[in-house]
Amino acid sequence: AQKITQTQPGMFVQEKEAVTLDCTYDTSDPSYGLFWYKQPSSGEMIFLIYQGSYDQQNATEGRYSLNFQKARKSANLVISASQLGDSAMYFCAMREFNTDKLIFGTGTRLQVFP
Amino acid sequence: NAGVTQTPKFRILKIGQSMTLQCTQDMNHNYMYWYRQDPGMGLKLIYYSVGAGITDKGEVPNGYNVSRSTTEDFPLRLELAAPSQTSVYFCASSYSSSSAGGYTFGSGTRLTVV
View (tube, rainbow over the protein chains, first blue to last red):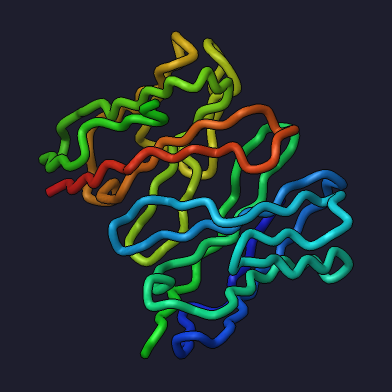
């Protein structure tokens, strides 16, 4: 069965510093997609970044980058130059390609302090 | 462009009552999903659909039913509400699995069963 593991229930980072949120996954499928979502206190799910299993380069979207290590089955999110508005829950998720189901991890609560 | 629309946003049910959570998307997405999010947790898949007339169970289907008579609509039915169904419910839709990203989430329905 496919599984996403986020081992950091909470993280603290000072404003303007970089932070890494960990995500490991387990799947036997050769094709899969990895996502990171942000959920602020208002509750909506905001898509941040995507990495396909066959993508050769790590994905980047502005201040977000995904450190994809396929052999280790990890897909860590790196946020550079943290801002107070980055304080939120962050979820790692994996898509099954045959059903398109999105499986979520338990999340990491990030708090950015001045 | 409305995206994914969920109604209602909030609802309080008494134990044993029934209700239907509505979900409509206007993006002509084939795939639609219902998730629930318990406090401090990740999203768990209740049911999903790969097209009109086709539905399947996710991780936590007990106590729920769905139907998909049109591409646009994917209602979730709660029969005999129980306190364990107190949660935030998200509807989502997506393109086929060949696309990067492509998931759109509704704003959620906060349900309390008392």
